[in-house]
Length: 280
Image (cartoon, rainbow, N blue to C red):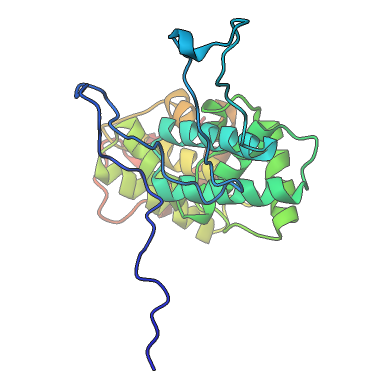
């Protein structure tokens, strides 16, 4: 037996019809943004504009119609965090799925109250860092710091606390996670990028860089590949893009330099031969 429970579906999205004669208005929406499922109150508020006519005021000159806050303090805090997350993500061109995952992570942490005493901006920054790694598009701590007002040290602390509180994890980062973006930002050609990727991978396979971070190894590999090509880049140029100090690049480079002849791909076209590479 077939039963019909409901023959209508309520659309909670924005209504884009306009009933105003002012066609030039940027936003023709009559009812505002779509409902936000992450907010407990549904993000449903009504704002009454200031009255201008005599009927809008009582005999003492007070406004008859006043706004009352219908959004809870927790929802307001989350909404502010979501706006900050969206702003940070926009600054480094992150897609919508990263923003959504970050918002969900922040909501879980906020509702658990497991990071009491930590600033919401710091938690939001750490959540963005985690979301990027979980979605396979990792960003460095320095990149997150550059778009937030939080120090690298504080983001790192919140990162560890969040992983523990949510009992979650992130995949280990590799040199390949950053190579394409770093080389692109440096304006290096495809051949140099492929060589740097090959060098970094080979260096790890040969266990030439034990204990070195993937970012520093990637930076050293880019330096070596660029120095062997016609598109040479300095340690400072690479360090500014990768977010590592010149000395860090030199330390990793010195570890791989003695085996440089084994690290380049067989088809690489040298502008500077291996024996003429900088020894640092």
